[in-house]
Length: 206
Ligand SMILES: Cc1ncc(COP(=O)(O)OP(=O)(O)O)c(N)n1
Ligand SMILES: Cc1ncsc1CCOP(=O)(O)O
Ligand SMILES: [Mg+2]
Image (cartoon, rainbow, N blue to C red; front, side, top):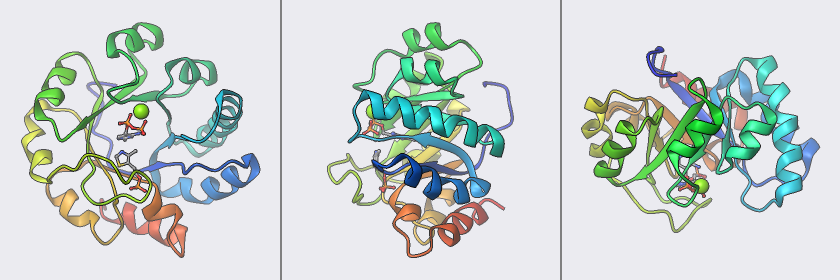
């Protein structure tokens, strides 16, 4: 992953959708506008998560969109995902790398913490996620960060992901501050027209 061109655009993240068919129906029309898709379902048990991740993998492969699994290294390995996203409670980066290999995308949450970003960049993360930048209905308690942090992280030389309450309307400030990818759940899936919202997010990187 390191050494490749910096990915830019919409990093779409799935909502907590319990119904498999509905999940695929909601995601499929948005994939043409997504640079990456993250499978995240905080309400599902292991069996549902395994089934949904396995169903998303061929959909993403057909669309040419790397699938990144939230939280779960074993699930990422089991479905042959392109990557995994790890937060502070999701296990060790080195262990994930040993399990998944050099070509797997391993992204990490850095919240509002520049020091954590430096440490995890040095430890081999493939991208650094910061936020929440705006109030998030998906994760109302998320720690908040300031856009200046994105600029401050530029010298680390890794793709910078912004997350938290992002919509096509508020995202331009984050792109201007250096976000390479905007990670979005509600701003797309809860929009009156999700396809228009996804298209508008992608257009910010044109
Ligand atoms: C791209 C991206 N950034 C941050 C997160 C949040 O990860 P984490 O802090 O582990 O919280 P949960 O998503 O697990 O609730 C993310 N998932 N993706
Ligand atoms: C997982 C996560 N981490 C910080 S905010 C957030 C939720 C992002 O969802 P939304 O785009 O709906 O605010
Ligand atoms: Mg997590």
